Image (cartoon, rainbow, N blue to C red; front, side, top):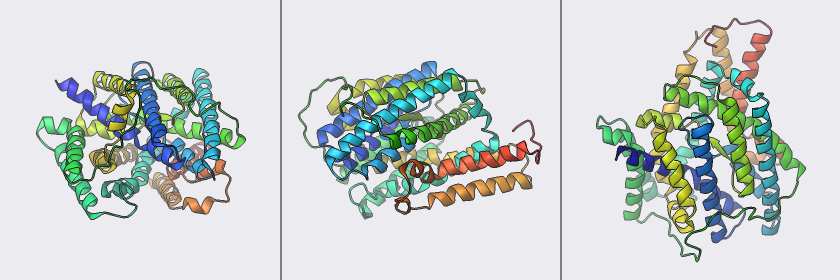
Length: 428
């Protein structure tokens, strides 16, 4: 019973984290409702396979696979460059090639062992900066999501906002409860209870009837034969480097949350991340990446076992073969998903602060932290609209404050080490 509930909780968290991206991308490219349903179906299919492969053979940790924010942004960025649906279709075909190139690059970097050197750059200072900037970057979307801004209306609706706040408070109270059944499955109860509350308040979106097969395996290359574009290929190179950073940070975070010993799993996890990218290319969906907020979820629920996670991945894979079931779960209200995961994200800040205190906070470390956070958080304030004249290949990096802050921290720390201006303790 306990493992069944744990598996269901993993399943719902995976679903909640997966369906928003294909829906928003589909709407941005003006896809039909049927096409969006199939997009969600393919995303769940690839997500299920990637989760199982990584947990069994890759990093061997219970880490949620979610749409990569980098590629999510890339899809939306290029959607804005399409003037007609036909042009949008051609862009989607080219984005597939970008995923293919990124996947091959990951496989090569992993097989050659180059990826393992990236992990050496993730000192406690860099890891702490990653966590703090992650919370800073996600705070805005989380608050907007909980309040329902953009859910049923682009403006704040009082009834939706009240429901979202109530669910958030309940989720936090359950996560801190002394009752084990409430604490461990707090996210599960928050999603189920929140979904019911939204239904009672008539806030759920209407699921329109769509004629489709009851059972079907996702099709390959549904957007047509992939086509080459140089700018997308360059974007793919940058996205690969950013995803590599996210991958290492996620492994570091979950190892600490599960109190697992640090193991050299960069090559295997990088290899299977490349495989998942290639699957995204074949089945025409968004790229997936092991996400670090899983650490916050584990800290909240105390669920560290791999078996319930693998079973949850199998359920995702099964659901993906039934289009209408996929569509049903894609109707999980976005404010409910944000509210249920709020406390898990909030706990990431604690991980970041612990990393900062892993070594002495002397003047040089404080300056490094201050510069990195100012650059990262400051970059988050740059409106994307101000980058319209910047080539798309650079917009991907410049619009990502998290990546800019982490890279800044690495450059400062490695620069000080290179020029011998700072002696590092064994902890760094």
